Image 1: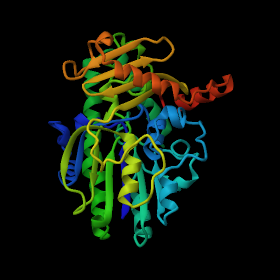
Image 2: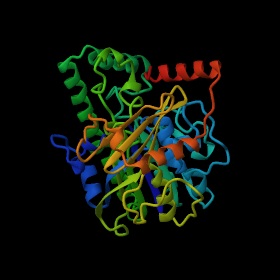
Image 3: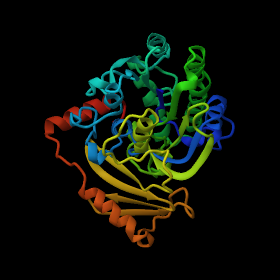
Length: 391
């Protein structure tokens, strides 16, 4: 069984037709969902890329694997999806938005090139079609600013600043332009990029024995949580600074034609469940991880979400329907929302939260790997985040 993991960065679930979106053409992804398993409530382990993607490939929450900034070092004994499959004879090929960032500390990811186009991934598929393989493809088409390649640094940063400026100016016109750009990027992701990759798998005769996992690392916001729009200083304030559902609820679809019964799972699942699922589907044993295979019926799984700032754990949340509890680590302040009565998370009611959620969030806090950064490390983190437009 081959494996393709396709990650569309910053893709909100509510911008796909199969999750109820209107006026957006995502026919290819919708058909993928109809022929596979769509998870209605999938929750990311973190609200931004570095810790979220690391959780995806380790099955561990960010406060356990400790990869909280781009220059963190993952414990070399930590098992990864790449290493586990490689040890069982799989060819590994990874394509990322920028080789200087994602998985650069994981040689077992075998980064082959950029994901800004499909060319490299398709060439790699053709070269490795005869052996079991894992193709991991992380694409930034749906990451702000839209329709500009990250490799075009000057244009990319200029466009990013234009979007931030529109949000800071509290301009309804600028916001609609940004959101329309996002919708077009979602359509391009679905109808050009995902469609082309699926067509290539079909033409190579690989689709019937390939697990295709489609998901996002986090969602997106456009400054709506900030009463003073001047506080929106960078990408971090669009995803990264908050743990609300528009940022942490993600699409998750699994498809294996003829092998997984199509359907919709309404119960809550987590991105940390992806790794053990893919290992079970490929008959590769999994070690101890925070995730549980999605092939097991578990009911609503409590989702833990880690918020970070400059490489430090700053927030920790537990989402257990119908409640979400967010703990601000330094101050001890709590936010709590009943998602059935208050799905937009506007009315915080920490006094009403079930006590078991509070117990769980503090248990997780006690288990967290925490280390203070040196001034030099803080400066490095700040530079890296600024380079990506997060600051």
